[in-house]
Length: 234
Image (cartoon, rainbow, N blue to C red):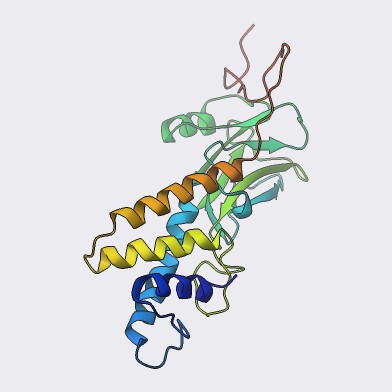
Protein backbone atom coordinates (compact mmCIF):
# COMPACT_ATOMS: atom_id res chain seq x y z
CA UNK A 1 0.00 0.00 0.00
CA UNK A 2 1.12 3.54 -0.67
CA UNK A 3 2.11 6.39 1.63
CA UNK A 4 -0.81 8.34 0.15
CA UNK A 5 -3.36 5.76 1.29
CA UNK A 6 -1.93 5.84 4.83
CA UNK A 7 -2.09 9.65 4.81
CA UNK A 8 -5.66 9.61 3.48
CA UNK A 9 -6.76 7.31 6.32
CA UNK A 10 -5.06 9.66 8.77
CA UNK A 11 -6.70 12.67 7.13
CA UNK A 12 -10.20 11.25 7.57
CA UNK A 13 -9.55 10.77 11.29
CA UNK A 14 -7.92 14.18 11.74
CA UNK A 15 -10.04 16.65 9.77
CA UNK A 16 -12.69 14.48 8.12
CA UNK A 17 -11.10 14.82 4.69
CA UNK A 18 -8.41 12.96 2.79
CA UNK A 19 -5.73 14.65 0.69
CA UNK A 20 -5.82 13.93 -3.03
CA UNK A 21 -2.03 14.07 -3.23
CA UNK A 22 0.88 14.53 -0.81
CA UNK A 23 3.61 15.57 -3.24
CA UNK A 24 1.52 17.49 -5.81
CA UNK A 25 -1.36 18.80 -3.69
CA UNK A 26 -4.08 21.08 -4.99
CA UNK A 27 -7.30 22.55 -3.65
CA UNK A 28 -8.26 23.77 -0.22
CA UNK A 29 -6.13 21.37 1.82
CA UNK A 30 -2.69 21.98 0.32
CA UNK A 31 -1.23 23.00 3.67
CA UNK A 32 -2.62 19.90 5.39
CA UNK A 33 -1.21 17.66 2.63
CA UNK A 34 2.19 19.34 2.89
CA UNK A 35 2.21 18.79 6.65
CA UNK A 36 1.47 15.08 6.29
CA UNK A 37 4.07 14.73 3.53
CA UNK A 38 6.66 16.36 5.79
CA UNK A 39 5.79 14.01 8.66
CA UNK A 40 5.60 10.82 6.58
CA UNK A 41 9.32 10.07 6.21
CA UNK A 42 10.04 11.11 9.82
CA UNK A 43 7.29 8.80 11.09
CA UNK A 44 8.35 5.88 8.91
CA UNK A 45 12.01 6.29 9.87
CA UNK A 46 11.10 6.29 13.55
CA UNK A 47 9.11 3.06 13.09
CA UNK A 48 12.04 1.48 11.27
CA UNK A 49 14.40 2.29 14.15
CA UNK A 50 12.13 0.83 16.83
CA UNK A 51 12.97 -2.78 15.96
CA UNK A 52 15.22 -4.94 13.78
CA UNK A 53 12.45 -5.65 11.27
CA UNK A 54 12.86 -8.75 9.12
CA UNK A 55 11.54 -6.81 6.11
CA UNK A 56 14.48 -4.41 6.43
CA UNK A 57 17.12 -7.06 7.20
CA UNK A 58 19.61 -7.95 4.47
CA UNK A 59 22.69 -10.14 4.20
CA UNK A 60 25.98 -8.65 3.00
CA UNK A 61 29.10 -10.57 1.98
CA UNK A 62 32.61 -9.15 1.81
CA UNK A 63 35.45 -10.97 0.09
CA UNK A 64 39.06 -10.68 1.18
CA UNK A 65 41.70 -9.59 -1.32
CA UNK A 66 44.78 -10.31 0.81
CA UNK A 67 45.52 -6.66 1.53
CA UNK A 68 42.42 -4.65 2.50
CA UNK A 69 41.31 -4.24 6.10
CA UNK A 70 38.44 -1.80 5.37
CA UNK A 71 35.44 -2.37 3.10
CA UNK A 72 32.61 -0.05 2.11
CA UNK A 73 29.28 -0.65 3.78
CA UNK A 74 26.23 -1.31 1.57
CA UNK A 75 24.77 1.84 0.06
CA UNK A 76 21.51 1.33 1.99
CA UNK A 77 23.18 0.48 5.31
CA UNK A 78 21.52 1.92 8.42
CA UNK A 79 22.82 -0.19 11.31
CA UNK A 80 23.75 -3.65 12.48
CA UNK A 81 21.05 -5.69 14.25
CA UNK A 82 21.01 -5.58 18.03
CA UNK A 83 22.50 -9.08 18.11
CA UNK A 84 25.13 -8.60 15.43
CA UNK A 85 27.23 -11.56 14.29
CA UNK A 86 29.77 -11.82 11.49
CA UNK A 87 29.96 -15.29 9.96
CA UNK A 88 32.93 -17.06 8.48
CA UNK A 89 32.44 -19.19 5.36
CA UNK A 90 35.61 -21.12 6.24
CA UNK A 91 35.12 -21.65 9.97
CA UNK A 92 31.44 -22.56 10.04
CA UNK A 93 31.27 -23.16 13.79
CA UNK A 94 32.95 -19.85 14.71
CA UNK A 95 32.09 -16.17 14.48
CA UNK A 96 34.34 -13.19 13.96
CA UNK A 97 34.75 -11.35 17.26
CA UNK A 98 33.52 -7.77 17.49
CA UNK A 99 36.01 -5.35 19.07
CA UNK A 100 34.35 -3.85 22.15
CA UNK A 101 36.00 -0.42 21.78
CA UNK A 102 38.71 1.53 19.98
CA UNK A 103 41.38 0.62 22.49
CA UNK A 104 40.82 -3.07 21.96
CA UNK A 105 40.78 -2.58 18.19
CA UNK A 106 44.13 -0.79 18.38
CA UNK A 107 45.54 -3.68 20.41
CA UNK A 108 44.17 -6.20 17.90
CA UNK A 109 45.82 -4.38 15.00
CA UNK A 110 49.18 -3.89 16.68
CA UNK A 111 49.74 -6.51 19.34
CA UNK A 112 47.46 -9.52 19.29
CA UNK A 113 48.50 -12.58 17.31
CA UNK A 114 46.35 -14.03 14.60
CA UNK A 115 43.04 -15.32 15.91
CA UNK A 116 40.41 -17.67 14.49
CA UNK A 117 38.69 -16.52 12.45
CA UNK A 118 39.38 -12.84 13.24
CA UNK A 119 38.05 -9.51 14.50
CA UNK A 120 35.83 -6.73 13.18
CA UNK A 121 34.62 -3.20 13.90
CA UNK A 122 32.68 -0.48 12.07
CA UNK A 123 34.87 2.59 11.94
CA UNK A 124 35.04 5.64 9.71
CA UNK A 125 31.90 4.58 7.85
CA UNK A 126 33.52 1.30 6.79
CA UNK A 127 33.44 -2.31 7.86
CA UNK A 128 36.93 -3.19 9.08
CA UNK A 129 38.09 -6.77 9.59
CA UNK A 130 41.35 -8.53 10.34
CA UNK A 131 42.61 -11.96 11.29
CA UNK A 132 44.63 -10.20 13.99
CA UNK A 133 47.83 -8.15 14.12
CA UNK A 134 46.75 -6.23 11.01
CA UNK A 135 46.57 -9.37 8.84
CA UNK A 136 44.01 -8.97 6.03
CA UNK A 137 41.55 -11.64 4.97
CA UNK A 138 43.16 -13.99 2.42
CA UNK A 139 42.10 -13.73 -1.21
CA UNK A 140 38.64 -15.24 -1.71
CA UNK A 141 37.85 -15.55 2.01
CA UNK A 142 34.28 -14.48 2.72
CA UNK A 143 32.74 -12.86 5.78
CA UNK A 144 28.97 -12.36 5.96
CA UNK A 145 26.81 -10.19 8.19
CA UNK A 146 23.20 -9.08 8.40
CA UNK A 147 22.35 -5.39 8.49
CA UNK A 148 19.27 -3.21 8.67
CA UNK A 149 18.50 -1.28 5.50
CA UNK A 150 17.51 2.40 5.55
CA UNK A 151 15.11 1.96 2.62
CA UNK A 152 11.77 2.55 4.33
CA UNK A 153 10.09 2.84 0.93
CA UNK A 154 10.66 0.35 -1.85
CA UNK A 155 14.14 1.24 -3.09
CA UNK A 156 14.19 4.60 -1.25
CA UNK A 157 15.09 5.96 2.16
CA UNK A 158 12.46 8.72 1.93
CA UNK A 159 9.00 9.17 0.45
CA UNK A 160 9.05 11.34 -2.65
CA UNK A 161 5.94 10.22 -4.56
CA UNK A 162 2.33 9.37 -3.69
CA UNK A 163 2.79 5.83 -4.99
CA UNK A 164 5.78 5.04 -2.76
CA UNK A 165 4.97 2.02 -0.62
CA UNK A 166 5.97 1.73 3.04
CA UNK A 167 7.82 -1.56 3.46
CA UNK A 168 6.39 -2.11 6.94
CA UNK A 169 2.83 -2.06 8.28
CA UNK A 170 0.76 0.74 6.73
CA UNK A 171 -1.51 0.99 9.77
CA UNK A 172 1.49 1.86 11.92
CA UNK A 173 2.34 4.69 9.54
CA UNK A 174 -1.23 5.96 9.65
CA UNK A 175 -1.39 5.89 13.46
CA UNK A 176 2.02 7.54 13.69
CA UNK A 177 0.93 10.35 11.39
CA UNK A 178 -2.14 11.00 13.52
CA UNK A 179 -0.41 11.50 16.85
CA UNK A 180 2.54 13.40 15.38
CA UNK A 181 0.28 15.82 13.49
CA UNK A 182 -1.78 16.48 16.60
CA UNK A 183 1.36 16.93 18.71
CA UNK A 184 2.69 19.38 16.11
CA UNK A 185 -0.55 21.35 16.35
CA UNK A 186 -0.35 21.28 20.17
CA UNK A 187 -3.58 19.31 20.33
CA UNK A 188 -4.29 16.48 22.77
CA UNK A 189 -2.52 13.44 21.38
CA UNK A 190 -2.02 11.15 24.38
CA UNK A 191 -4.66 8.59 23.39
CA UNK A 192 -3.51 8.58 19.77
CA UNK A 193 0.10 8.02 20.84
CA UNK A 194 -1.00 5.16 23.09
CA UNK A 195 -2.87 3.52 20.18
CA UNK A 196 0.25 3.82 18.05
CA UNK A 197 2.51 2.35 20.73
CA UNK A 198 0.18 -0.60 21.32
CA UNK A 199 0.03 -1.33 17.59
CA UNK A 200 3.81 -1.02 17.40
CA UNK A 201 4.27 -3.55 20.22
CA UNK A 202 1.96 -6.03 18.49
CA UNK A 203 3.77 -5.70 15.17
CA UNK A 204 7.15 -6.18 16.84
CA UNK A 205 5.86 -9.31 18.57
CA UNK A 206 4.53 -10.66 15.27
CA UNK A 207 7.74 -9.84 13.43
CA UNK A 208 9.83 -11.91 15.87
CA UNK A 209 7.89 -15.02 14.90
CA UNK A 210 7.24 -18.06 17.05
CA UNK A 211 9.76 -19.18 19.63
CA UNK A 212 10.95 -22.80 19.65
CA UNK A 213 11.71 -24.50 22.93
CA UNK A 214 14.90 -26.55 22.63
CA UNK A 215 15.60 -29.26 25.22
CA UNK A 216 18.63 -31.35 25.93
CA UNK A 217 22.28 -30.51 26.60
CA UNK A 218 24.34 -28.34 24.29
CA UNK A 219 28.09 -28.77 24.54
CA UNK A 220 29.06 -25.44 22.96
CA UNK A 221 26.41 -22.74 22.51
CA UNK A 222 26.52 -21.12 19.08
CA UNK A 223 26.56 -17.59 20.51
CA UNK A 224 29.67 -18.09 22.67
CA UNK A 225 32.63 -16.01 21.50
CA UNK A 226 36.28 -16.93 21.65
CA UNK A 227 37.25 -16.03 25.26
CA UNK A 228 40.85 -15.04 24.50
CA UNK A 229 41.90 -12.90 21.50
CA UNK A 230 44.96 -14.90 20.49
CA UNK A 231 47.02 -17.99 21.13
CA UNK A 232 48.14 -18.93 24.62
CA UNK A 233 51.88 -19.30 25.16
CA UNK A 234 53.53 -22.66 25.73
